Image: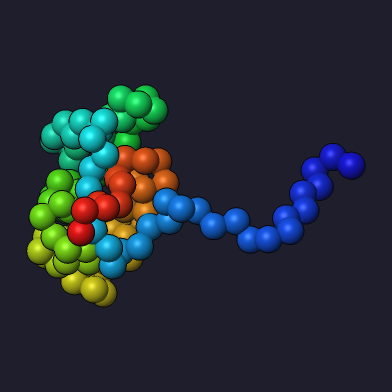
Length: 105
């Protein structure tokens, strides 16, 4: 049968985004500031991502300076009530390997 998929156990993504841990930009990612925000290019995967405003650029580039993603958001002036779109964007960047979990914490 075509189109049939049976999953015996739920699959968990090891790269799932957790805003309560420390993240950093992958060492193979270059961040290039642009008038609209920034471009992120991953030299390993050849993926390109666009950051559409300067607030998300500030959050992404300061992730390594904070104990977790929520702290980076607050430092950039994003309150908890406004955080959902930013958390979603960070999750997308994690799934595309632009951001990685900081293991040395």
